[in-house]
Amino acid sequence: MKHSYISLWIMLLVAFGLVAAASSLDEITIGNHTFKTASFFNELSKQEKPLFDISPLKPDSIVTDSLPAPKFPVPVDTTSKTILFFGDSMLEGLSPRLAAYCEENGHKLYTVIWYSSTTQVWGDCDTLSVFINQYKPDYVVACLGANELFVRDIKAKRAKPLQHILDQIGNRPLLWIGPPNWKDDTGINDLLSEQLDEGVFFLSNGMTFSRKSDGAHPTAASAALWMDSVVRWMPDHSLYPIKMEPPYKTKGKAQRVTLLQPLQ
Image (cartoon, rainbow, N blue to C red; front, side, top):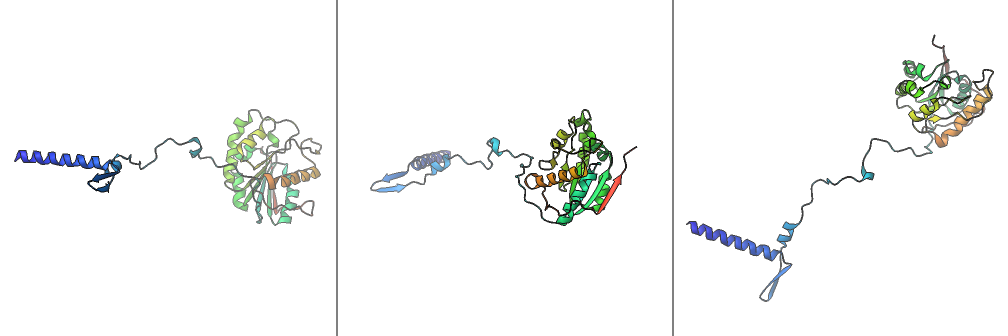
């Protein structure tokens, strides 16, 4: 009985060997007949494709968390906006001209002037959030930095307060007007340029201004031209351009102007 099983296994092995050998050929001829093989052996010998591609990623296929750089010019948003304009005393000259633009283009303007304020003054408190909650702006304009032109080691001292200002603004469209330098600064413009998104910061340094007797603040007429320059810059360079057709009036009135006194 044992020998019968051994003989059977030998016959099966021989048969399998013949089938494998025949399958490795494209065709086989027996007598006057030619047969196509099933290529069984060839199918077995093919390398199976892996379920997942584990090959190294090419450098240009690696996904990063960084967002693509914006493509300028950005389409102009023509809808009416509620604008909050906050900052230091430079707003005294800028706000009336911005108000004229807002009246011409259907925007509402709320201005908050904090005299002698800095990014640290605004960034060390939640005052900005109070006005954001009060006026519910869908667009924010800032002008800060003039009182920080000569702060030493400013990037280390102001980066955190500046970030808190930006956190309070959140995802609202922002335009930040840089200070009108009358002397070289120690880094405030570099800090603003680095920490603000591209197309948010308007660099005022390098412009020519007619100044008041204090030698720092632009005159009313010069501040109006300053605001005109910002508006002309927006369509091609702003990340959040809005409708700003030239007004017929030289100056306008904001819906409300709030004055905050310097900290003691």
